[in-house]
Length: 163
Image (cartoon, rainbow, N blue to C red; front, top):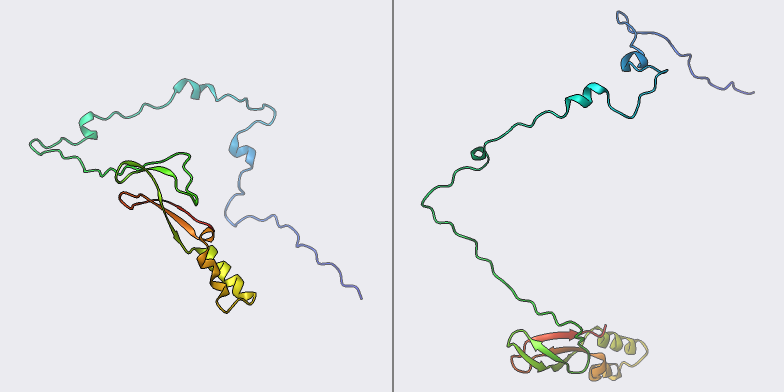
């Protein structure tokens, strides 16, 4: 048993009671379909030009300053940053300029245990080196991070991270 396909209800051509039907598009726009509009604005708009802008007096824009009050400028702190182009901090001492003591120095190295040392220790422990052998990476300086210090004032000049 086949059911008939539902169809859309018929279109109603009704208007509200007491109101006339709305005007068509051509009636509203006033366009003539037989005369195409050109790319130029109508002649009456071209001749009129833009409306004049209102003018303001100079005194209206800026309030008058009070006489006798001292004018102070804000204090600005200047921090000098020294950039040393081409200087790469590795695992050997380098010649660098210290911004603290203003000296050209050869850096002093300090080794510290970084993530590579700890991961190496954990890796050895996983593979069965649990009786102290997993602590060997803490004795190898090539696995540690390197901090470069100034030998005169001990300020940090750079850091070389292994991982």
